Image (cartoon, rainbow, N blue to C red; front, top):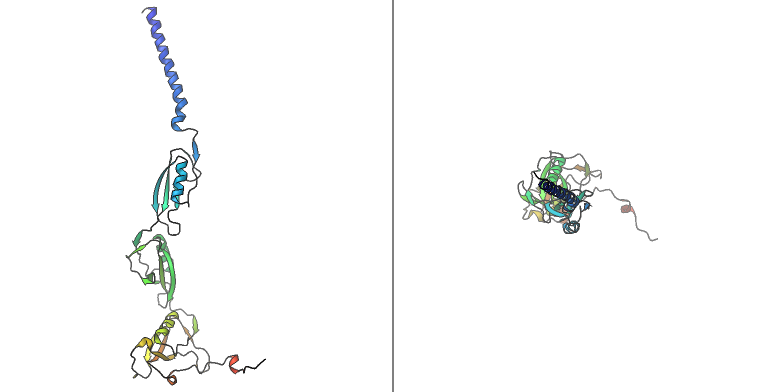
Length: 280
């Protein structure tokens, strides 16, 4: 091989090597442009914000945003519940931030069966189904502490009926007939319809009896309670006591005259009953 040819090959080989070195240096010098090295940002906390405001904030920082939804009854609709990556994380521009947003309209689910469960178990089941505990009332029943009825807007709701998550479910609980005593209420000289509401409020069990067994009752709710057993006071003038779940007998007459209505004649006089008002 001649010296000229040899020198030519070496020359071109040197050029190729030099070009490779230059390309190598140029590649690594521009690598940060492709990876956006040095443009890392701290992801802000957008939880609790309205989804539109959160998306605008993230996109202004050049993040991509992916939105999903679920339902939490205690939180505002369309508010951000979760975010991934979490706030304070360092990420490059263009990174996707995943948001979980509270639904505007709650989904409907089948009503669970709470009857016969304990109060604690019923509350847990409602919570798991994203339902809320509504009004809680007690009713005389041997099943103390057990759920007797489940109510939606004051009406019984059967298991399996569709109900919106976030709805309040009322619970009727058995009180085991209880042992707490209270004074017998005075139910005389009132219409049966009114008295039945009072009896229900006291959780008493009413038995209706016609006064003489012969009087004709044409309309029970409008009939008048002429007497009751037990009465409000005993023969000594001391208030009779009764407890939830006890029976109270209502003796009724359709249209009694005043002499047919029992009055609490044994009621003890108050201090003012025996005083004469005197001018000062």
